[in-house]
Length: 217
Image: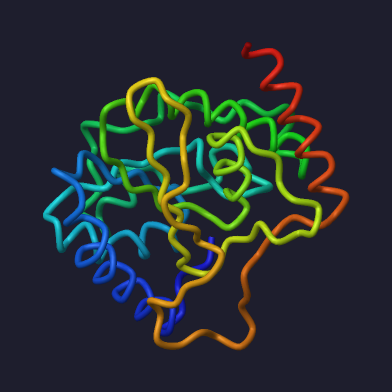
């Protein structure tokens, strides 16, 4: 559960500034900020939470890959350092339920993202919600869009990249903006890069997604 680097903290502030100046003015309101319970995602969400005066809602479903149950500090323990965390309202009603201590990657993680996509569709219906999660959540984007990932491996998530999805009433989700790059960031760490699944993982994901879509119709 490593923290952000000094550069990462600056990128988080730049991301908050971009969201506040560019995306939020196009919405009537922001209803919630959902955050993975990992330290670096909480730190990334904190600048926007402070700017908007809006609490952070912890959401276990969008946790990092290889998740280990009960391995992270509780919300109450985090609150001592991050008072932006909302202790009254959270999305822990979605519990990661993999078998064994550690979530198997990639299959169990991918199955979790499919379940999260269904849960989010009801949890955010009619709301404007900002999620802070991890690069592998590019699979969640694919699941919400019900669109397979291209086999050229071009479907990636950049550090502090911003995917913007929109859904009107019961219409399908559509992508307004892609998070495959992070042009709002002034400086990138030379050791970080847009992340995506490899070819075998992409093929497995597309197979699981197709089965999920078939079972849902």
